[in-house]
Amino acid sequence: AADPGEALSVEQVRAAAPQDEVVVVGRVRNIVKGYASFQLADASLQYCGSGSDPMDDCGTPWDYCCLDQSEVNAKTIVVEARDASGRPLATPALPGLRLLDLVAVKGRLVKDEHGVTTLVAAGWYRRARPELPDSVRWPG
Image (cartoon, rainbow, N blue to C red; front, side, top):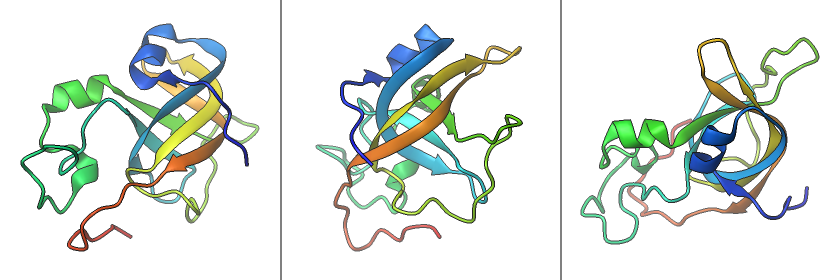
């Protein structure tokens, strides 16, 4: 319910895993339908149509299609809220959370046997929601 305060970037925490307690700030890139899980992109990445980007008419700015995808993937992390058995919580939706929202997530960083880092969320706080052109159709 409250902003967790000072946060690290996605890029910083990917290099810091594992870690028991961390706060990370970034933009929602993708929400996994049916689960309390989403991708968080580093806030330094300029989504399509933001700033001086030439793709002002991009209909899907949250996919960062105007950037090199290897850079985007290197600055993205999976966020999951998990149940007691360690599985992502099933949920029909994540109310109040939308693609490109700037959020601060509090949780712990885990790294699996394949070296994939996941932020296991204890909670998140939406700091900002960007204004986009009326031509953008939000998925859903």
